[in-house]
Length: 211
Image (cartoon, rainbow, N blue to C red; front, side):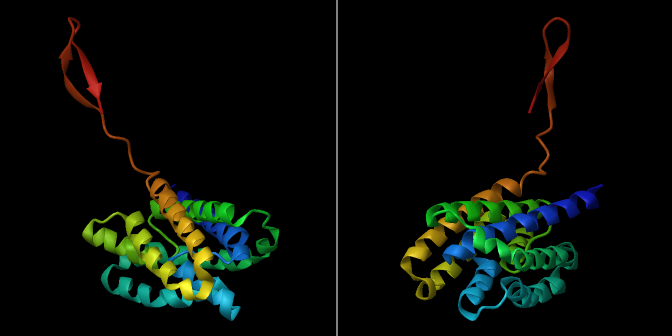
C-alpha cells in the first residue's frame, strides 16, 4: 500500500510541478531556484528543454548522495526522472497562460511547492538542490523547506543580470510561495500526537486524555 501511495504522490507531485513551471513561470520568464531554476535559465537563453538540463545537472548531486546514503538515492532517483520528464512533455501549456505576472508568480510557486512537498512527504524529490537539502536535513536535522529557500534565494539572485530587476523581484515571490507550500505539504504524513493517560478524575474513575 505504501508503494502505491508513493507512486501516486510522485505522479501527482510531478504534474503539479510541471503545470507550475509551464503554465505560470515560463510565459513570464520567471525563475525558480534549484535545478528547476537552472533548467529555466537554459530554456530562456539556450532554448533547450529544462527537464533535460535538470537531469544532467542533478547527476553530480546523485553521485554524492549515492556515496553516502544509498537508501536516499534509491528513494529519490525515480522522482527526479519522472518530474523532469513531465516538465518537458507539459511544455504545450506555455501558450495557455492568461494571468498577470504577479498572479503567475504566486500560483506557479504554489503549485511547484505543493508538488515538491508532496514528493518529500514520501521521501522522494525532484532532484538537484531538493535532494541536497533533504540529504543535509537528514544528516544535520535542519528544516528542508528553509534549506531549499536559502539555496533558491542565492540562485535567483545570481540570475539578476539575465532576467532583470522586475522579474527577479517576482521570482523571489515565487520561491517564497514554493518554500511555504513545500513546508505545508511535506508534513502531511506526520502522525498526530498520541493521547496519554494523565490520571483518574471524578467518582467513576474515568480518565482524562490529552494530546
